[in-house]
Image (cartoon, rainbow, N blue to C red; front, side, top):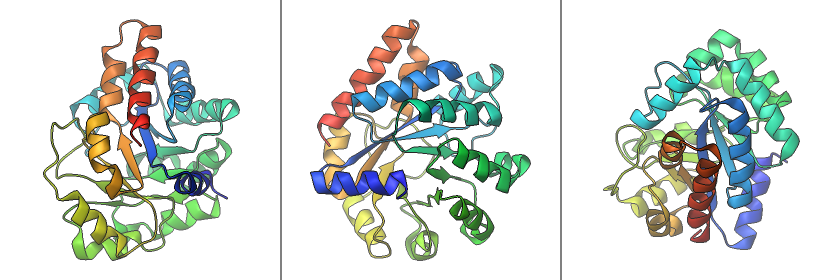
Length: 262
């Protein structure tokens, strides 16, 4: 069984919701990326998204854009991300997901990317800029390697949700609001109605992301979905960390506080 499926099955039986965390590979360096994943797992993270840095991350707000920029300037490449994931997999069994833009996959070679990702221990791939109309080949390649291609839906998707989730696996990444990633003080979308709409088209777990700022917001939305995705708030702690040990401690404390309410 794919680790993502196993994790959601376990959490459902335990009456818990998934905490999915995001960090950018290579920010501030690959070694610290590995330490962060291990530390977040110990703090309660259930799944970790590893962002492959890209020069034009159109779905990401300023915090994650800066993380990508720092990682690229430090020399992080896709091969670096593969090796980092492999090193993480040797240390822990947490489900790992690559978040990557399609140009990176295309230039690397879709089949090579999927094979190398599988060999590195990756369980899922999120490609924010891959249109549903053009994803069949990529989905087939990923599936042949036992990797879920995880779909994204938005509050504006409506009648497109059925096509978006068809044949997908792992979970549905439910974007909370219009716009890009980033910490939000409030989310104006009617999340309950939105999640109910998604569930009419799929039995896959629904994970809400884009703007989850901390424990209070997680507690507010936990009963509407099967998981919550926290990215920018964690990446901002990494950015602010002057001392490596203190930064790791701050991230762990933050992750632990969110998991407590899930």
